[in-house]
Length: 165
Length: 462
Image 1 (cartoon, rainbow over the protein chains, first blue to last red):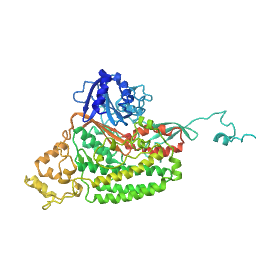
Image 2 (cartoon, rainbow over the protein chains, first blue to last red):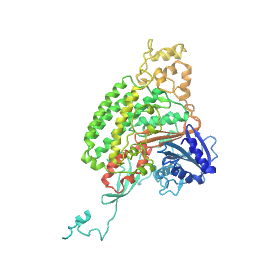
Image 3 (spheres, rainbow over the protein chains, first blue to last red):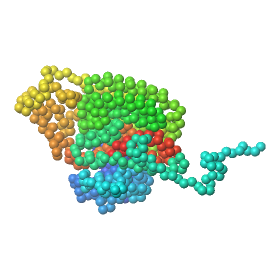
């Protein structure tokens, strides 16, 4: 299926739950309401014609300093889906506000989401409801803050950890 | 007749007598492997729970080499991220360079010249061979085949000499540029590459004779560390590990970029999904990579790499002096002898290997110093607050790294700095699934399995 057809199929099935769809530089994107996220992802995985059997990537973007987006929902969680048998891709995004930074976990659909979501928690401070092991992935537990947030300065020092001598 | 006397049921009973272990029970033992361990190729910690020598449960901890790649990219200009990409997968840095450049080019909506595409193919394939050589060599060494390690590092040395010839560096090469590459290939590159490949092929032949079919090697590799097809896909594992379970998915074939769809090569697959299948896939892929590189070199457009200039070359200092005095008329037509540091970057070479887009690609040095337009163009790309400015938007672009799909997701807010650069590391999914490969197997099997996933710390932890 080409990208337009994928977006059309999702639009036909989920209608209002799809806030927006667009294609930029050949990447087709569906912006999904948070409540319908898991249903959309599950449909993408299980529907025979879509067949997105691989969650190629999961990440987030902090839009708080993005021109025109300063007031809107601060974060976007971005899912890059890939179908190995059909060889097509889809980007699914969900917007999350700073006050309620929770997204349902996709680790029940694709086990790789476990680590990807831990990294997003680590770097952005977004929580994934129902995650089996919500720990930091790359940084250490004593790290203060979430460094890929736009309000985290690049030169901030972290307190030293380890045994006191 | 009586039934044959039954032997002791377990090793424990054999050692301690019949009925041993039934009363007291056993206790699992925690054993931490790493983060510093000679057989750990990067810094990683695996906390295992052992029952005897069998791993019952394993917990993989990563992040020891985290250097804030994604955060650092947001600080400088779009081209400033290229040295950081060298340090992702430092065994095949060229692929990272080109992967990042391809993502930014997709965002900008530009295409590189055909010659540049072929150069990227050649250099990426040389990198891929280096990566596979390192992986197979190092993991065989851990199984006792030290000779193989030395042979393969010798072969890698020939390839690194090629890389050095082209990029000027062996490891941190920074050869890619948004819109092209740093410099054209050196004049005698074709012959050097063929000579190096001849040596590499001899090494591969020797290694095949030493390893493929070797009893000790096969005992440690066959049936060890296997992962099923469904689980491999569910864990988003790509690259040699996915092809080792029989899925012919390769980004170079599935979503061709650069010149891969013009070349004749095969996607190598195996079906067993164990360490031995991964070894076979990597060994066969090295031959395919050499085929690709040779064909790409044969079909490379753009004519001879060094074109003869007519007229007397001018000393660069005199050239700059004339430009400063405003005597720029005709200056652009005068060829100059460039410093050896700028080999492959003269005006003609730049035009061959870089996209013809003034918004993205630095002008050649002759133009910068010989004309006011060139100087302005140079400043507009270098000065603070100017530089490459992709339009608002986002793009995800994937290339086939040595370990699988290397994706870059870039977001631009229209300024000269990346708003967000996300690297999808091909190493991370296999490490996330590592506990599935080692649980239920011997602690000793951890070593070949860990070797076969080819963890690269720089790329995994970023």
